[in-house]
Image 1: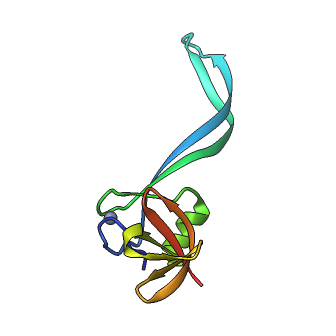
Image 2 (image 1 turned 90 degrees about the vertical axis):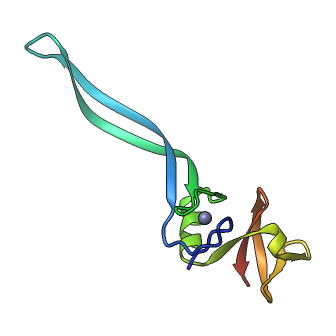
Image 3 (image 1 turned 60 degrees about the vertical axis):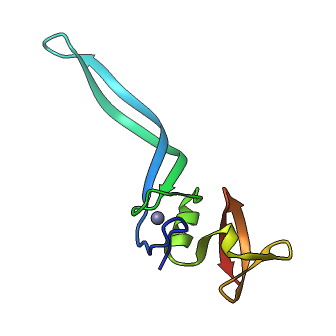
Length: 115
Ligand SMILES: [Zn+2]
């Protein structure tokens, strides 16, 4: 199960704040009372940014896409504090006796993938 690098608790869901750009098209007319009557006829929503948080401690996790979130919740990648692993070579890390590849590092948190 996924584990939070800040509070070390196992988590099976995340809190995700999503910023969205939206394009909406309306048909606008005047109703019987003279007020504008807006009817939405089309809408497109585009994701622009995610903020992903641990539901238990609120720590902001360095996950920035659907794929990152999915990989983390599936346990395919680990997020750990940088000081808990030993970096070996350019893109590998030793963590709890196993070698992982380092996908990325952000704000002191390493994203590790089993090799
Ligand atoms: Zn946490």
